[in-house]
Length: 101
Image 1: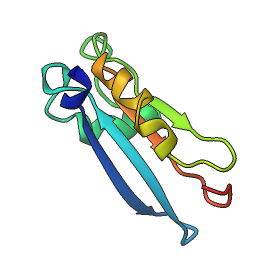
Image 2: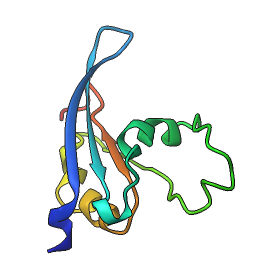
Image 3: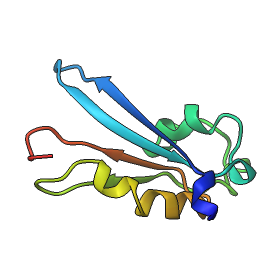
Image 4: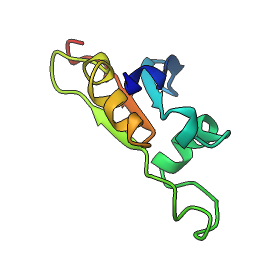
């Protein structure tokens, strides 16, 4: 199964408000991943990537997944994130506090 090659990482991040947030990232397989993919995943997501336009033409955008009520980031991690990562898209899913997840 080609989805088995994807690297999935779960992190707990302390927000400025003092609230902990869970973030799951799913990195494409090594054959489609640059060595600095993990470091650049958030910068590309939020548009702060400073690479030149000529070097980023072949780079796929980071896909962000947000859950609805009574869910959390886990709802994307089993099927959706590995699928898109297998196509070369770096993925990130956020857990929003206070929604029942």
